[in-house]
Image 1 (tube, rainbow, N blue to C red):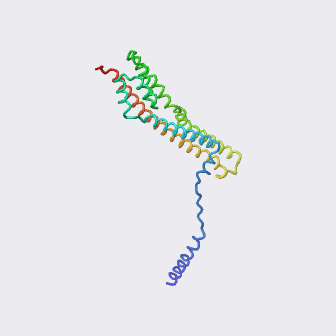
Image 2 (cartoon, rainbow, N blue to C red):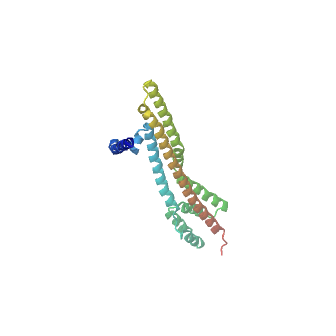
Image 3 (tube, rainbow, N blue to C red):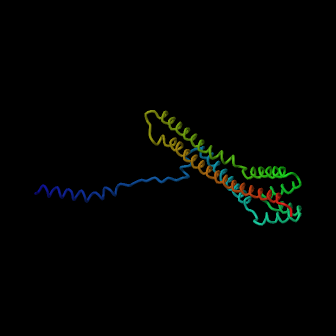
Length: 236
């Protein structure tokens, strides 16, 4: 009985001392700062930052141009029809010149070719349409290159980071420590993440711009067909 009482008293004393021991332990948690983390990627991160800025600039600039090209006056073709039916070709041509859209420039080119064979008129309109599409797609090759090249540059940083880590490990000899390898490992991992982030964003931006251009091209084709049908209408 005495032994049980002594064991119980020892357990109570240990339980009473536990909070004092646990309160003495301080948990250290490091917080990840994205800016500091980016600096650990080395010079590769500077290249990726420049590429990201270029991609964002091209995306915004092209998006504004494409949206402006896609805006059309719903009464435009009706006014063109009225002018053509009334024989007011100059008025129709002036309306096209005042309307700053790809469709208006295509229709204007077709009006300037009135009196020639229908095939010549259509070819002239298609040539202008190709030039307009090329203007809308200006900068697309560069943003596509960024989408494909940024991950490769990130992988390049991965390779250089691992080379740096192994170089430090070789020079350390038997005194290898994890803190010694941290800089190279940081560079390897951070550049990979940075390259993938820039590449993925640029890829989505490129595909979105392509879809916007396709919508404008569809409108241009619809206006071309409408104009050609107008020319093929019988004269009353």
